[in-house]
Length: 406
Image 1 (cartoon, rainbow, N blue to C red):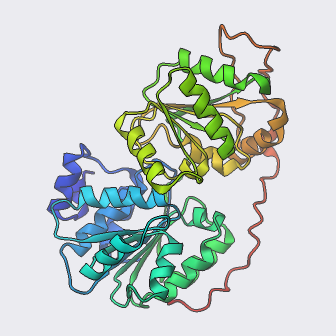
Image 2: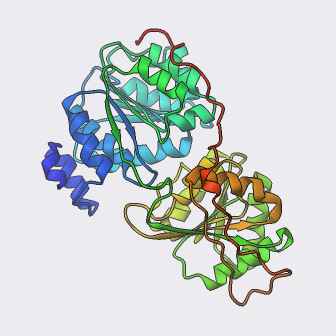
Image 3: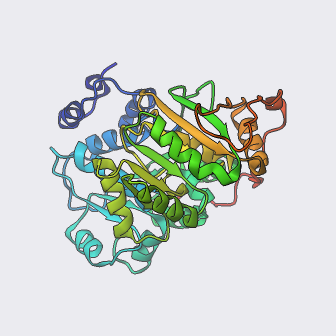
């Protein structure tokens, strides 16, 4: 199938062609016709499968041109970075359309957002907190909303935004089309979906594994005191285009960045303690090739849509198994191949064990040749640990509790 066969507006298809895409990904092929038909959708797919275009392309096609009844569409995202990525896609794919939009998130002044809302924005892309502020101050009204899109809902649950999302839904008209996208559907999200959606079409792109087949991932055991030395050796040995390095804490991110800068690497950093302008500059510089390396905390695990990331390196083993999947999913995107490696010390065994149980398979252990290890790394694979009970994330909420659908 090609994009020409999905009943999208010719102007939208032209923008897709200009981007170099011809064939939709599985989530796009299945979701776009359903969205165009006007039905509600629950969609789930692995990271890097083109999920954002699965709702932005039909959204632009359905709205088509500017209307005085604004806003007509609302897209909720959990982070500023994700909201910015969606906004960029709307700008590009909607370049031939007469549609207006506004990007709303915290950490910046209200002035430009207020001006855009007063001028009349067809599409609002927002994070929950700042949007609630505008709604409570009556800076915008959602009475004419036609389409509501809740994206990365499991991430919003993890960040404690679900109650705010429910409050925002109550501002929306009952008669609307609603699209919900989430990598996972724990009970609390299913409860929200039952309340928010009406007779939804369920679209799930299932893989044989939770990790993308296009990503070669492995564990590199090393003494904790040698992690930085091994990281430097890996960067010298690997043939990379751009590298995303994840650390557990903001302090580690700053420390690793300084170390790499001292060794003449082109590197920047992104975490919650940096201002919005600093985070925006870091991301833009990384995307444009100004920096070869971006060091980040999990703020970037789902907040990046950067093509050509050849390597992801976990400086620490992620504490949450789901974070491992999302981190390594930053490479190997859109059917391209990528490499993701994790530096592991023995004090992180419990985290590694939980990851392998979550993805239901052991991760290969490797040794970097010609690196002088303080002690010989243990490359033995674990036993049949994958048969053990999966980790309980604690989502024991019973369905219901949000009230009737609004």
